[in-house]
Image 1: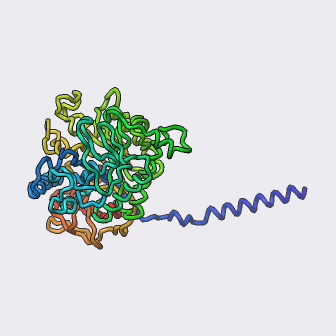
Image 2 (image 1 turned 45 degrees about the vertical axis):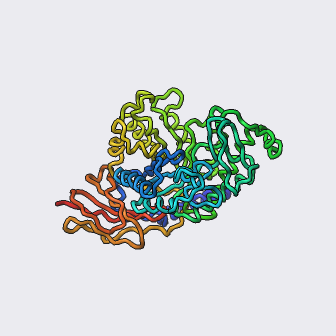
Image 3 (image 1 turned 90 degrees about the vertical axis):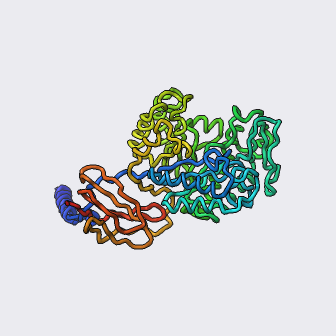
Length: 486
């Protein structure tokens, strides 16, 4: 009987304690939280909108133009057109063939600049390229081919002389391609040193690698065997294929680590081929692992086939790459060069194919942007494909935050008001401002402008707010909404 009374009293006491606990206010969730005035607004998706500028063989730039002014004029023509199209990033090939578009202690001046490999062009090419892009608030990402030194049609043509800093034992000369040997620790260190040298000297926003790692035997001709490398360095690997993949893994990690240690605000991006199997088993590039390990900030697969392609369906590949991007931000490469080309499949004879592809990428919340290959086709405007791109990109876009936070956090603009058709605001520090416009607060807004100023003429009825963005592309909270009713 006493036990029953004891348990009954214990039950009453426990119930009382619980009821009292329920009355204690939750300090993490206030009873009357202050809602943000802009909480219900639907902001447009952030996008990195990029274009590859190919310099191997002078394809996009300088296209055989060897005069300094002619080169500058051509590049400015590209940038002015990109600015009109609201393109916010260029991916410029600065190391296409074991050479450089800047004064490098590791590699000679590119033959594409002057027509003669190793010849000083007489001006700081890379500084000019970067400065002109930044004048237009266009990011500049330095595109490098990690291993390729030279190509040729056959053994009948000799490869060019190596740079004095290159030990010939670091180089493999296959029949049609000459490369730095991926198996050598010295080569991996050299690659990291080249990247470190570049980002120390120049204000680039990113380092970009394309899809050339181990060469594809179908295009390399007769291959030099790497069996001796495997015998020397391959202890602990189950197969020569695993050994090759590990060699490239170490190179990618080495570059990532060099960037983070030297200039962490620089982002690291790679554009693999569309097929994961081809990357893994032919080029020995384990891109999925690089994403999973956090060695890449952006993965930019080259989805150059149409929606519905029986071998590399655009939609299917989009799903795979976004599923296995892990911490890397996925962006999508598009084959602008195929539009209007008579040898391309029928979908590329219509601009509707580009619209279909963008509809799919924009619907996918993981996708952070798009890239066009390549620059000259933007100017060519075959079948009015650039006009279609202009319609897709009709409003500016904010580049998403992609890498590491280095700059101070941006602060919310204040004193936002409209007087006499002029939107004005106050901002702190040397920040750019983003002006958003909402014709209907229940529908997605648009970016009106990304500006260094603190005012903008406005004429349309509706709602406006302003944010600031810093050098890392981190964005502040939005300001209060202001209305224009006249």
